[in-house]
Amino acid sequence: MSRHREYFSTHTFGILPDRYIRDLGALEKSEFVDGITGVLEVWRRIIEGAEDLLYGLVLQLGSDYTELAFSKIREKQIETKYILPKNATVGKRYFDLDRKYKANELIAKGLLERRITAKVDVALVINERQACVMFPTANGTTDFNSTFYGEESEFYDWCMDYFQYRWNTAMRYDKSKFRALQ
Image 1 (cartoon, rainbow, N blue to C red):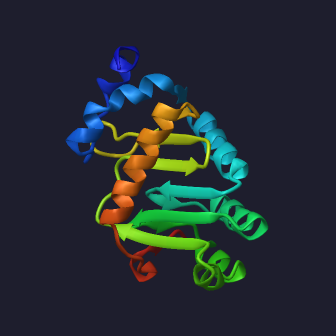
Image 2 (image 1 turned 60 degrees about the horizontal axis):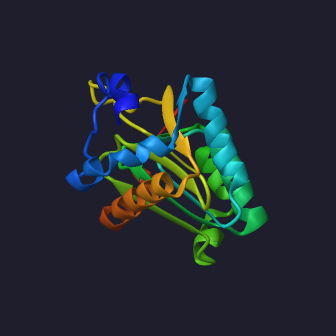
Image 3 (image 1 turned 120 degrees about the vertical axis):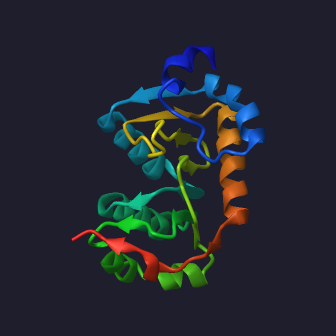
């Protein structure tokens, strides 16, 4: 963690349970990506690189990344799970894309599962080989201008374990709570 000391002087661990804070040394095995352009490229790389699974613990679903993920699920028949906060903001085309890509069929086939949670402050995007994690700033807002990204097993396992923990504590999906951007 010493090489990320400056970063964590302006960021917090959010609602991470102690066991994940104790294991944050796994971040040493990741690459720090700074800047929104770099973060968006990491997300695209993870989504496009998905062959077997795609998991997300995110605050929002932008239309471009939602469409990219839906097309990937259809094309590759990959297992996809995502968790959103119960008051998530979604891109204005989200509900149209949900219908276009027949999300209900994907759910029936077991390819798509969705849940909601009270709060997301530590965000994740994961495929079967790569992961990234974003932490909140001192004011509690998730920082999408920087991410830790990697493929090394210790870092990847930390991200996957935290996703599974959040998945197991999340609630049934209810899109009626979401706000669509206009």
